[in-house]
Length: 98
Image 1 (cartoon, helix red, strand yellow):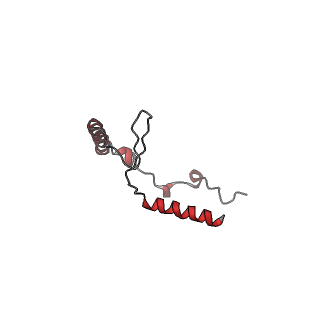
Image 2 (cartoon, rainbow, N blue to C red):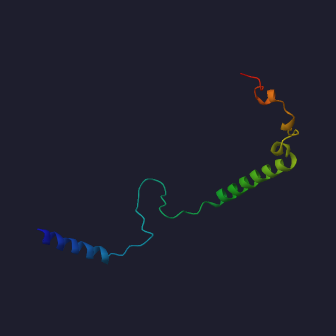
Image 3 (cartoon, rainbow, N blue to C red):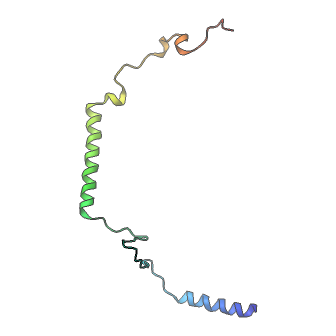
């Protein structure tokens, strides 16, 4: 029994070794839409143009506001000097507190 199974295993291995596999084998599916497996189809030209215009507008918006409203990034007011704060403002209890 082991010999008969071993012979069948060798036959199957030789059949598999003789088969040619290609990297672009795709299964046919009738699901109603295009399926891409391991390869990305090129997008339509109008989508590429729309994406580029949208990204350009977004970067224009960012740089415009960085140039004209830079106070949002660095702050509009002077940063307080923490060395002038009292212990009470910092939440430190007095030395004689028990």
